[in-house]
Length: 74
Image 1: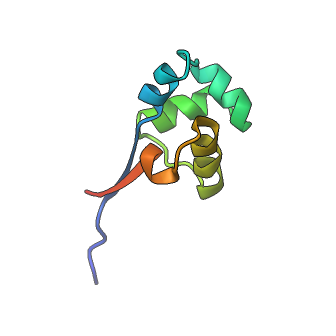
Image 2 (image 1 turned 120 degrees about the horizontal axis):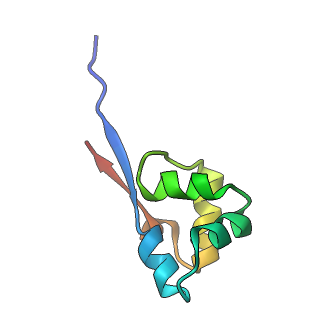
């Protein structure tokens, strides 16, 4: 049996929110159609967003996906 690797999706959402007129978690959540708690969990890397949500968040900041999210091997 092959041992699976742990993975981690890191993000720059907190910094990007600050750079965009100190956007709140609630404002970002409303703009992309999720709850504030979802944004909190994503920022803390406790939850990895769906690909669709990741693209929506990146689009909200006007950045390419790879400038908002990074995939790191555990």
